[in-house]
Amino acid sequence: MKTKQLNEMGFSPIAGTGDRDIEGGFCGDLLSWAMGRAKSGDCWFTVMGNLNTVAVATLVEVAAVVLCHGVTLPAQALEKAIEEGVDVFYTDLSVFAAATRFYSFFHNERQQ
Image (cartoon, rainbow, N blue to C red):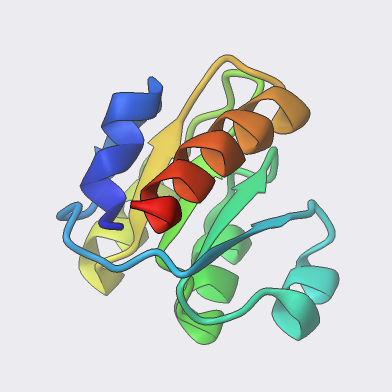
């Protein structure tokens, strides 16, 4: 599944190309927890919309970050996400609702 398919789930793109491969999902807001437990290729659901989130996403090589509860990136973080090629999306949904929507879609894609 490609990150551009996150649009089909109702997540709005704010940075990136949409061409990265998603291999799984991760939910978490503690950046050190994400550094140690998120995997390369994960779609990361969080409310942490800041420069450090972009840094962790780059370090871990997540496929995309989905900012939940209407969180967006400040200008400096957005510039860095674009520069680093990090795919970032946002939604007004809670982390739980966004992740379950993703899981349903992701699971169905894997079954086909």
